Length: 368
Image (cartoon, rainbow, N blue to C red; front, top):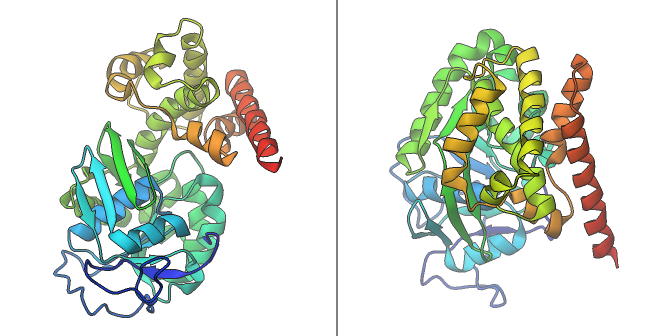
């Protein structure tokens, strides 16, 4: 992945001097070099790259580094410059702390080293380009973990990294970047789940499940609740059912999740989106932990919505600020799969088209 205005950074410890007063940071160093000030006593010898240091990626990377791991963040320049000046300021439900000393880069071409673990946290539409840029930066016995929204990311990563080095994850905590250099955890619904997809990984699944448990234990020990699972797909699809109902409608109507669930005209639309996605999952043989859409909806409204009641989807921010969303990996992917399977997905099709149209509206505004 390449972010605008390429440059390398290393976040400085308090009291260090800057060679560039404008951004108050030390001279750039080769990322593969050892820091004179960082002497880690880590739980694992694996160096970690967070590819996509947005809100979620920053939280994961910052917490892991604070726990003693060798972490590099790959992200956008403005955010990294702020971290280089004053450390990463983490706040919210996982506690408050300032994390300094991480290696930072906004261009994969300048990483200069290989990593034992890559946590892929880029937007789903950047997965393919990120994977191509990082294919040579994962160690032979390393693992890349898709920490992303939607469907299809695991398959895209396998194309670049190979089946034996890719894991999937379900991340269902919310975070935001209030200002560059900070990351705030707004909601934490369930532990991060990491595991293989046996339908894809086949005979490699047992070994990958063991690796997934080790990575999950590392993240959990760093203060971000996480678990390893033998099959990530049922867990991932459970989140997809949640996302296809809430994300597009929250983005279009600019409402939080609780307001959507309480609206008598919106709720039936969400129910239809869930039912269509559930039918696709069942046709694909996904072992969902629900016997029917009705059983899922009961859990959805009674257990999932309440803890995230006031949360707004990231798609809302992406739609109105970036003019690009992950709709194609969510509702759009349900439509694609349903068409392939000969199933109905008209509600998801309409939601996909509405979000795509809204993206074009934002893009046109930005061009004026």
